[in-house]
Length: 265
Image (cartoon, rainbow, N blue to C red; front, side):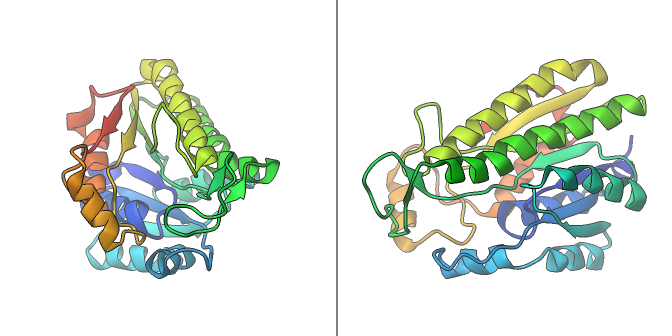
């Protein structure tokens, strides 16, 4: 299958890594469905807040201006009923989805400790049913349901070959002050690995990408200085650098990479 005939569904594609991924895949000739859900959180840094509250129309405009193919769609992934419609839109616009990038997150700060704010001064809340439902609903449940829909349609049409990418963060030792976020990402990675094993007979690869500290609107000068002192990182990354890794994994060159967490430095 040539890149011109491939179709990608990218969630959280209105800003940051999701937007950069949509644009990079489109530049490679892949048609893109850019799914997003705009929010306006007054507690976020202003640059990040601006990114989160916009739709994906600017992303689509840049893609089409460069000769690519893309459509955008608003989708609240907490509502499981919207998921089949994303694939219906892709099929009506371009054809069946063969690349799924689970990038969207319900990111929030929650904790088991008695802290009222995180290290950036943002409000923290205690772990609760509400924080669990929001974080796991987007990152883990929606991610799993998107993979399930992807797989069902692939098998039904007798397809072969496909790519599943999950975005992750944190680590095996936990994610202080964003504990539900870290746990939900761990669940998403496990779902992704299971998909890689179960769908390998259909030529599907499934991997997770763990970006370094990436400037999606929240990075300050203090964060940059801390990263430069940390031997685990080269420097603060830009979203397009993460998109380059995703582009490799979904390319023909990445056809033998599966069941892996790709950690960026």
